[in-house]
Image (cartoon, rainbow, N blue to C red):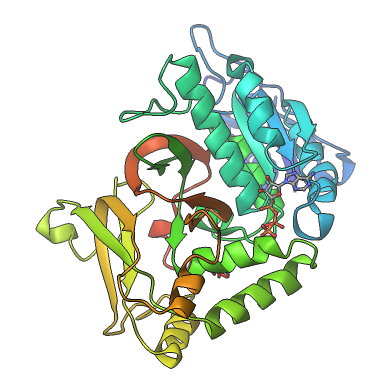
Length: 398
Ligand SMILES: Nc1ncnc2c1ncn2[C@@H]1O[C@H](COP(=O)(O)OP(=O)(O)OP(=O)(O)O)[C@@H](O)[C@H]1O
């Protein structure tokens, strides 16, 4: 086996080493030209460096391939592995691909958001986040918020947000990496890095979560009720180790399970009949609304257990699913609840705020929350694994 190349043979395809030898032996005259090809045996190759060359008039070498990246690494992600993952597995690949990087190792929650607000995004071809879903969500929010600021928008009220100016790359290194699973079909840092290097880009829908007076977040998913109360309880026990805290909050919230009083309104997505069997996808301007009505604890646990499976996951009489564009949730206390129930419903905060779990981040709001999906608001590095039958993103977010 050898590596061969030719000196401007007018686009003729190369012959393999073995074929060339054979041609020579047969005395084929066309082989005279080919004989100018040079061969290096693979065993003699120490390393290969490809220089990017452009033809006259060609504007770009490879479309979308980044040359300069702003990188955020969350050193606290999943057993503090993110820094190691980045410097050992990803940074060497970026270097080989001649990509310049500007790295911020975040020091606290909200650090990436602060840096992004001050960042000159024009200096970069993309932003990369090394961490779990919590970090990715913060960076995606920061990137989109900065885009609105740069576009001169009022960041408290953004009915028509502008798109993020550069793509976002996700290097999975967290405890939960649902977004990375969706984009790469796998939690694998090197696969993710290669998608970034090759400039594979996937437009993705993003939601805005707002109250009547302010924008809470740009994000991808939210839970009201059980998933939010679990998070609120876990946050109150920050002193506990992460997994212990989550398990404790989950079991305690389940033990105290009560129906959540709220008024829900939504705008269904108008989709053509032939697509009506499809649920929400990454970039078709839709989101899935899953409403779990009051039921027994046993039935609710059955529903939770099936949550991670792909087949019949919501096939319960008390679970309704809708494909929607907008949702409004107006929390409200039912008159006539007994004191114990009232205490539960107001457990998250003395001010009567209701907890929301937005991409794993706790937000507490008293007023109505309006969720809207904005089609293809951000480009993410990766491919759309919606179409890969084999991809099964496992979700352990609750
Ligand atoms: N240096 C830091 N110390 C503590 N928290 C940080 C730091 N840098 C970033 N964060 C915050 O940590 C949160 C969780 O990060 P991430 O999702 O990457 O990790 P994880 O292991 O998946 O976390 P989780 O336990 O929430 O699943 C993010 O909201 C991020 O803002």
